[in-house]
Length: 612
Ligand code: M6R
Image 1 (spheres, rainbow, N blue to C red):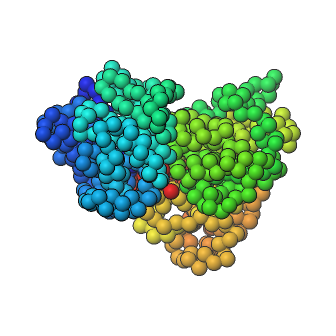
Image 2 (tube, helix red, strand yellow):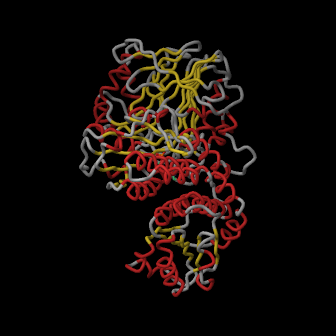
């Protein structure tokens, strides 16, 4: 949510900033701006525009000669999408960019007004710039420290001081910042994807510590001025992993990367035990005791990550026979949740920075629960603050609509459920091994599913003019329906709802009229007959029925109830969420694409939600 980049060094700063902003645009794309240090009377030049980074590029003069600057791509929180509200913001000697929300900005604005300071924008960020300027007496770290003591909320700031050319100061609380230093200069960004062009080695700026970036070095100090040595991290992917590589959209590329994403997540964690295949987390440092000592599990996450948790819940309850609840992270912290040292809280997050999910980790730890996070981004806040972390190895996910991160999260839940059921003795070693074999076959099953792209293309043409759409299923299929619904909604702007199939007739069936599309997932053998009854109910109201099922069940379907029948590749029934997810993602993708929408950057959304 908002992308930040800063550079000081020996390259053309405006190019570094504009390329970095293009890489970070998925974090917000309402408006964008840069500020560069120049050798003129007014030493900081600010250029901002409404719209995408490409529009900003059009107005940045080629003659802008600078080796130091900061840039920002915005997802509006306070104040509309206007040029004055775009970042960078300027107050006196301070120019800054911000990711996060300053919760007490109104109160601070009141205080600053008494000293004659009036903002020109409607943003919380400008108030922060004014505050820092009001505290600046030549010592940048001191002003930043004093400001941080006054600011409530979340922030990542990159700050330029007019009297310190070519130096960038940074501080963060709750919002991410990663930093690297190379022979070409020092770079700071919200996300590693913007640093990758310069280095694979980086560090995450620890919270409430100040980084000072100069052309040749980066120094970090705590708020008392004591030097800090941050922990260096590295990524094992390169620039091509964060590019489209010939695909029209990142989303389509990422859908096709799912076999690899699942393979990379699963393979290192399946070990041979004699002839048997058993999941093993010793290299992740996750002990069996974590589950054996838990009397209940709570999964907290947002959006698609939460939907992966819905599948995880079913698997864990079935296999482990302990209560598992799924909580929307944004509600969890305000519900005074009943958790204690016997509770295991599993959080799930692609970015590892989602503010509400991070808050769930913090609250759970405060209350004595153990926390395990399933996270894709290495070194992210959620990963660092959890007791244990199980990384998904999906690689960088750029499209706002999450696809490969979701199936990698599913894979993580399958590993967890099987390992701990085995450790607990509720699953025999033989059965566990058989499941592991099936899980190892999933990447191939996903590849086979991708071969049925044409069916989804055809179907999507039919769905393109729809206004409303329903996804129905039972058990695992209901969990998947929830994911299918959000995917379609967020990128195609078609209203859709996911319903437990049996629940439809308790109210929502009144919305199902002639021609309304209903996607029915019927992959689970134990509820197949019941599902078909529910399909008949919508069929009787004239719905346009798309039935997704398995090769085992397909021959049992009375074809008069399905306008379109999609048969998934053969897998054990427990594993159909992987293949069904791919079909549903493709339907969402093509529907959005045929509607001529911006698939990768849907309106009003951003990839990483670092505000509550
Ligand atoms: O980074 P996270 O996994 O924590 O993000 C959670 C949600 O914001 C995210 O899954 C969102 O729902 C996606 N846009 C869905 O495709």
